Amino acid sequence: MTTDPVRGIFTNRTLNLRSIKAIGYDMDYTLIHYRTDDLEKRAYEITRERLSRRDWPVDDLVFDPSSVVRGLAVDLELGNLVKATRFGYVIRASHGTRMLSYEEVRKAYAGTLIDLSESRYEFMNTLYSLSEGNLFAQLVDRYDAGQLPGVRSYYEIAEAVQTALDRTHVEGTLKAEIHANPDRYVVPDPEVVRALLDQQHAGKHLMLITNADWEFADKMMQLAFDPYLPRDMTWRELFPTIIVSSGKPGFFAHDHHFYRVVDEENALLKPHRGKLEDGSVYYGGNATIL
Image (cartoon, rainbow, N blue to C red; front, side):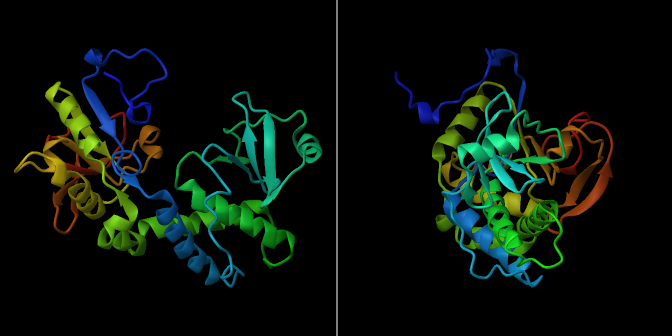
């Protein structure tokens, strides 16, 4: 039997799944796939509106999905987007939206290795980075042209864009639009459901660990999963452990406490100590306790 490589599951080392007892999944862009250009365009537009309210000249800016990709690094010191090799050598770069020549790249980065642990760099490692990278590059152009009065550095531009984009994703406008019009934003994928059913039948303990809040996560999982599950089964029966508002990547490094959602209708929380109970919904927490 041949397998479509696009639909395969890959690891970067030999992995014996017999020894794996539990598997955790993110929701957005993992279990649920979105029409990236449409979703990131709308996120860009809402974020642009927020920046416009700061009297920044952004109303004429347009989202360009082809201008950035995942895997780039943002150089906050020079206002550049850079593509580096696995060893940290810069091979291509743009300043704002303008591609730099070979000589300009060599002059800026000769003897410099991109170290993502340094505060100078931000790694664009998710599809959410597309709208953020677009706005940052375009605003670098405006800053260089003297059109952002009061802004003193590229760091400030990046912070303003990230703060506005975070609010776009946390607050309700974009979420409400996704839920109201799933055909526009969500890619149906029954094969994801079948893969998880196979893992469940193989005895794996499945966990949903998402940064989304409970209300949004429940609505989206119902939309994406329930139509493809066996009759009378819901998505919650696939995931004995459900953690929302997890705060990743801090979830893996911090020691935040878990809260149990005791009233799912109103998202009321109660501090939780001890083992997580199957079938309950938890808020926050950290990987060590899990």
